Every structure is written in C-alpha cells, then in structure tokens.
Image: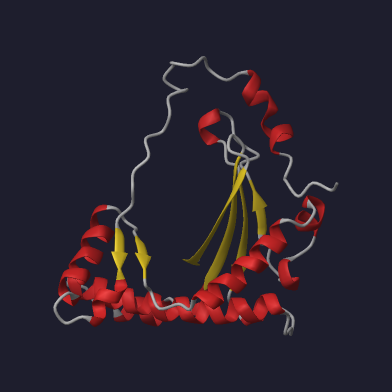
Length: 210
C-alpha cells in the first residue's frame, strides 16, 4: 500500500537516538491548557450580547486567540471541506509533495520540521497553505475550489464581525484592518496532525493573514 505519510521517522531518526533520558529538563512534557470557548449565538440576545463581546475582548487580550461555537458557518460547508481535506491528505506523499494543490502557483504543501535539531522542535504536522487570491489559480470549477471559495467567504465575513467587536472593545479603529486585510492577502490552512501513540489523525483548518 502506498504510504500517505511524510518520511517523519527518516527525517527525525537521529534525534530519537540522541533523545534525553526521562526526567531530564528537555524530556519534560509541555503543559496543556484549555483555550477560552465563546458561544457567538449570544450576540443575538440583547441580554447577553455585551457580556459575550467582553469575553471575546478578554480572551483576545489575555490569550491572543480563542475558540468559537455557533459561529453561523453552515455545517454542510464545513463537512464538505472536511471530506476534501481527508481526501487530499490521504493521497500518496510523493503526489502531495510534487503537485500543486488545485494547480496553485504557490508552494502550498509543507510537512514536519525537517531542520529540527532537538526533540522540542519536532512536528508531526502536514499542512496545505492555500492562497485565497483567485490570481494564484487557473480557471477551475473543481469541487475543492468551489467549497474553498464558499467557506473562505463565510470565514471572511465572520472575521470582519470579530474585528469590529475587538476594535470597539479595545477602543481602536477597526477600519484599517478591514481596509487592508482583504481576502486576496489571506490563505486557508488545512492541517493533518498525527498522534502516533494513539494511531489517530487530527484535522484542523484556519483562515490566516499573510
């Protein structure tokens, strides 16, 4: 069977042979924390909207990022993108490494941390960085491109809404970000994170500003 996984162990082999003994400072586990979770449906409730906005501002100020639920992006769109995400990442590694995603002009696929020099720098992540500017793609109506367009439009509207809330709460002018952070300067990042101990795959997606 053709392997879809990047050559993680070949790239990291020497680091495992030289890993520190258990109990040493470098071998200590990284502490995990639960990120703030904000329910955006409360923005539609007059009694809860202001409290929800304060939670968004606090989470952004203290943590720098946060999770949201009930954000208004249809589940059917997210499910369609997830199907495309799984299909693309489970292609043979050579195909992913050699071919451009949807014919993109950019170098969109990356994996791991091939230049890692210590166990702390290891990454079991695969990612596609997909530019949202239509100028980077040939004319296409593929299912992947259509769902990416639909999702990125919805995520851009959501981002504008959150920017407005943060600007208001922090006493800043949100117009600069809205005017300068357009869709054509952003990319969609699709991730696959391998958990080798649990033999599981984790799937993530982000909308990022370049």
